[in-house]
Length: 246
Image (cartoon, rainbow, N blue to C red):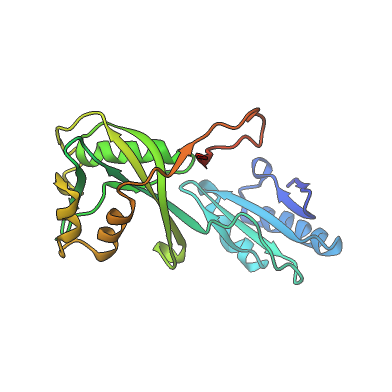
C-alpha cells in the first residue's frame, strides 16, 4: 500500500493501491501507522470505496475515526495526540430562497405539503452549484415560473440544523420571466400563488420570520453578481457578489 505526504505534515494513503484482503490490508495499514507515529505526522487520511467497506473495522481497530462520507466512499483519519485542527470537515449546508415580485406588486409564495402557511420558494444549493443557478432552478421546480437572478438581499444562519450541521440561507431577488404557475413537484409542493406582499405580511398563518423577512427585503437592491478581473487558475472564485456604490 502506497501513500504520499501532504504540505501539512500529513499522510494520504493511495486508494488505488489498496489490498482487498483483510489480513493484507491490516499489515499494510499498520506499517503506515507505525511510520506516521515515528515521523510525528499530524494526520493519516484513508479513503475507502464502498467496495472496500469490509475494511472499515480494521481501520477503526487501529485507531482511525470517521471524517466524512459520500455516496460511494468513506474517509477516515488517524490523528496524532497533539493534533487539534482537522481541515475540510463538512460543517454547513446552503439554501436559497427567492423574493419574486410581479408588475402588480405581488410576490410568489408556496405552501409545502402538510404545512398551513406560505413561504418563499427555494431550497438546497447542491454541491458545486452556484447560488444564482440553484434558486432559479428551485423556483422552476416548485412553481413552474421562469425567473432571472438579480441580487442577494440578505442571509441568515441556523445552528444546529440537519445532522448537527449549520445552515446558511441566502435570500435572493429574482425577476419573473413568466407568471403562469405550473407546479413541477406536486409531491413536495401543495400550492403556489401570487399574493399581495402586504397580505402575506398580515397573514399570521405564515411564520413570523418569513413575514418580517419579506417586509424588510422586498424593496432593497442587495449584492449584485460580480466577475473579478483575471479570475482564472486553480483558485478561481466560484461566485462573487459586491454591493454597488453610490
